[in-house]
Amino acid sequence: MQINRKVLISLFIIGILALGIGWGTHSLFNDTETSSGNTFTAGTLDLKVDGNDDPNVVYVTLSDMKPGDDTGYYKWILKNAGSLPGKVSVIFSIMINNENGVNEPEQAAESQPYAHPTDGELGQYLLPGVEPWNLPPGVTIIARNDEEGWFIAEVKEEIDTGGTIGWGPKGWTVPSKLESQWQAGPPHPWGIPGLNYFSGQTRGTLGYLPGDILNPGEEVAFFFRVKLATDLKRWDGTKWVDVDDNIIQSDSVTFSITFRLEQVP
Image 1 (cartoon, rainbow, N blue to C red):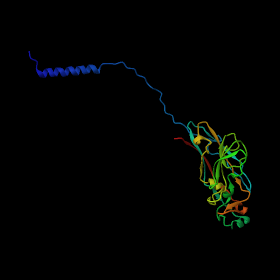
Image 2 (image 1 turned 90 degrees about the horizontal axis):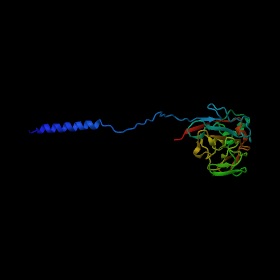
Image 3 (image 1 turned 30 degrees about the vertical axis):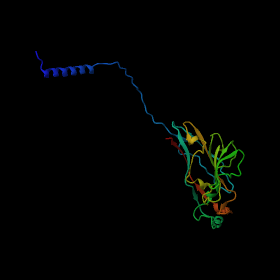
Image 4 (image 1 turned 60 degrees about the vertical axis):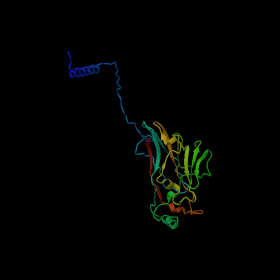
């Protein structure tokens, strides 16, 4: 008996399909494990200043200043109370020099060419620093720029540095890394020397902390100090000239210091 060719082809296809169905239902060894309890939690960045958040109640205040007066060192302790490392810095606001009225002695001084008719002059003569040629023992300069009139120094022990700003251990009364600025000659333009030098500036830790990084739980102290010059002088482009000290009578300087902790990328 002959089998129809079309029938053979159909039976062959049916057989293949049946075999495929058998493959599809065939089981192999397997083992399943489950990772459970996965959680994503945001870290924290929390800067404490003297153990507090804003508003901070430590103010640099010195009233009735006279030539030669010194603020002494003010100190703030900064702590990273969060769980993430952060870059720490200090930002000085724009220095505002206030005239606060003019009495008779100041009026005579204001007639000099170095006077500001409407602004105060005190910020020019609040000296944030000591001269690099008159350093106390134990202070070593590690960077210096005579044209701009500043240096950075290391302080080996707790001594009266007479300096400006700096960073150091929280237990010290002076910084161990000090930045000092003095009134320089040319090309330093007049009006910039003194406390005005810090106007609008951001300062890191001067290398006291590697990369200015404050790790979780770490603390660092920031120090600030200024002195009113004993004898007011200014640079006229060729030489130092005396300034009538009465020019700063009743003047004041106001500014803010902002402490910042920024997440490290």
